[in-house]
Length: 372
Ligand SMILES: Nc1ncnc2c1ncn2[C@@H]1O[C@H](COP(=O)(O)OP(=O)(O)O)[C@@H](O)[C@H]1O
Ligand SMILES: [Mg+2]
Image 1: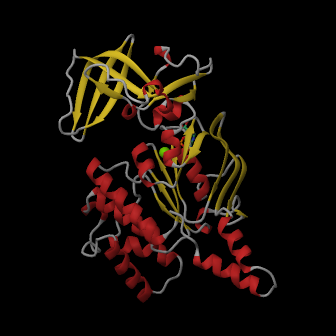
Image 2 (image 1 turned 90 degrees about the vertical axis):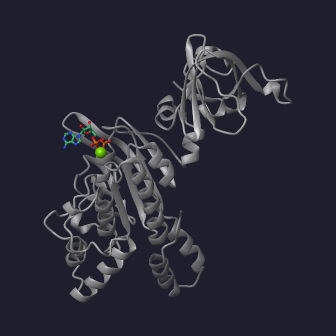
Image 3 (image 1 turned 60 degrees about the vertical axis):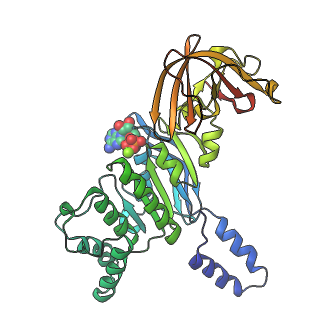
């Protein structure tokens, strides 16, 4: 979701009123300029490059996720943006101004930390009041803002509780409310749903999405959870060993991964070179890949279809079938290798058991060439 920024656009338009020329040009330029920018940022801890040559622009209102395995530098990148860590080299800009020398309290950002970091000795109400107090908001205004925000996150009856008297999901909602209450232009989330169980995580994903839709904050979220990244983001940056491996929309990354690393990190990937099926396409430095849901499974070789020549067909034996509610996942042995097939459960379809001989087929166009 890309929302516009009424206040900044208003300011740009107002400035422009003094001069002849196109207001629209100025407004467009302002909306398109990045709100957050990393320019060749490197962070060394001793000899270790936690983040290396990291460059990134984030647009106003964008929801950007930094995704990567543990230790890939995600939190370090976020902490530099928040002002808790200083880059070893490079520059970070917010709204076009370098903030390298600005301490964290001078950067107008709402932050949700990995472990929520609520003040344990303060009630929910007092936790929410805190950022407002820091900004000098008067008591009466504070009370009404807190009330409104508690209502927004469905916790209006929990204001007098301590964090320890709340469930994980409720604490998480308090943390989000506290990050948003002072209306910061930027929201930073570090593994916001990491501590929640699956159902709650899905529910909170919906909650975060709807808060983003409603408040339109530029949001940077750090996670190792691919599903969270795919669900929430306008754009995803995949990190590997402190560097950006690939960036793009969720669809781009999932459907057109450029490397084996990205293909495996976002979803499951069948590597096909072992089967020597796409020899003509692959080179020494590439490997071909097909997603499990792009592979079809049959009892016997499918009768000739109009698109036959565009398909690859192989024979195999089912080794395993996992039933997971709406889908079945098969592991099929083809020669030396296992191919994963993911099929949506539907009425009337054949169900295969270990030992069954099957045929697999897929469209050649669905095969991706990756750097190895
Ligand atoms: N304060 C620190 N001192 C030394 N090394 C650190 C520090 N913080 C992070 N690192 C190292 O930097 C790398 C990236 O860490 P981090 O940004 O926390 O990764 P992630 O959030 O992706 O799990 C890791 O190798 C980690 O051990
Ligand atoms: Mg981390």
